[in-house]
Length: 240
Image (cartoon, rainbow, N blue to C red; front, side, top):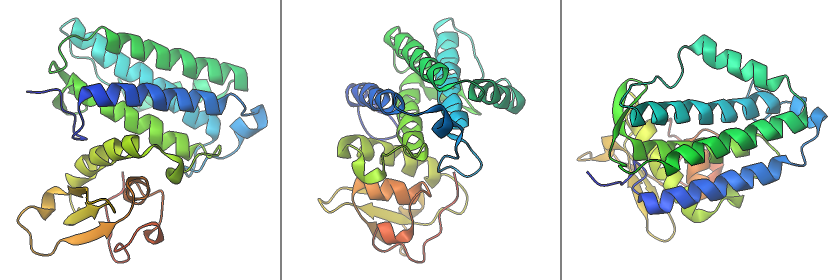
C-alpha cells in the first residue's frame, strides 16, 4: 500500500504539517501563566494544564507504539484508562515552565522516533485494529491541531492553515464516518473540494454542508455550532 493517510494526504505533506502545527502549539504556550494553566480550557471538564499533559502523554503513547513496532512488538497506546488518567494528573500538577518543558520534550521525542521509520506501511496495533504507521502521523496532527484550539489561548479554527485544516478534516471524516449513526454527508468547500462520509456512498439522502475546511472541521469535531457552516441546521453527528 502507499503511504497515503486516512486524511487522503501524502506522508510528505503530513509530516511537515505536524512539525509546523507542533511548533505553533509550543510557541503559543510559552506565554501562558501559572494561573492561566490552572484555569478551565474550552474542553468541558479539563483545565489547560490537564489538557497540556494529555497532549504530552499522547505523544509518549504514540512513540511507544512506534518503538514497539520497530522492535517487532505490539505495544498498546495506553496500558489502561487508569494509566492514561494518572499520567494526565501527574503532568497537570506542575508549574507553567515544567508544563512547557514537558510538552517540548515529549513532542521532540515523538518526532525523533518518526525519523527512525523507513517503512511507513509497517502495520502497528492501534486501539483494536492494525493500521499503517503512517496513519499515526495524521492522527497525531489532529490531536495537536484540535487540542491547541481547545486550550483557548488565542487560536481558533479560522486561524488554522487551510492545508493543515483540510488534512485533519479528511481524518475527522474517516474517524466519525465509521461510527454508528453517522449520517450521509457531503462536506463541500467554496473552492469545490469535497469529503463524503461512508454512508453517502450510493445513498440518495445526502446532506451537503458547506464551509471552509477550518469551519467544517470545527463543526464536525463538535467545537463549532451549525451557524459556522451552511446546511447543518438539522444534522446530528456522533460525538468524538
